[in-house]
Length: 209
Image 1 (spheres, rainbow, N blue to C red):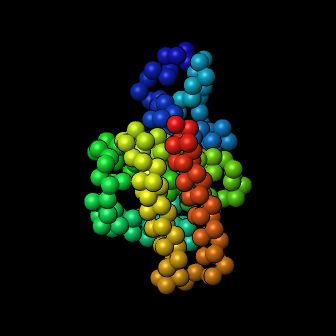
Image 2: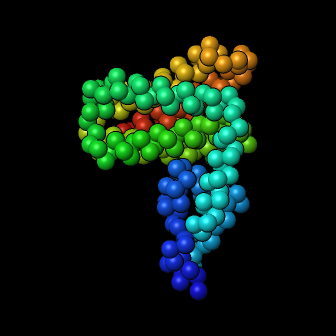
């Protein structure tokens, strides 16, 4: 019965559901294991998600994102700034080396990392789990960069570019919105801690070679 059920179009694999929610699969796995989204296990131990549950969960998350705290204010500005900076740096070797498919994959990782950073800013309960997911994203990016022929220095230039944009946006946030200094300091520390994890994971990929 379960085998027939998961073959229906109404069920999604872990990667399909994560793609629909625009999050990393490890994030969705954690949500499922914590009981935040319904999940079914196949006889082989694979997670399957009802398409209706994924759609409902996406609507719930959209509603939560509509409550604009300091993290969301920062994310909105950071995304806009990143797009502008990417246009200005499109001739850089760390960007030009990637083919279209790899650039699209890196954009997806960037969106996942942004969503993960927002989680890390807002939630201190699952700190280690979120940092582990950031580490996994760093490993994915590092593997992609190495397979594309980038040297470690070039791969780190790309991740540092992303980090600098995130930090600069946070530094200038009080100029644009009314943010308490202590709240902005916490924001900077949380962003820095998470992105440090990503940089170290990128270096780890090259060390493993």
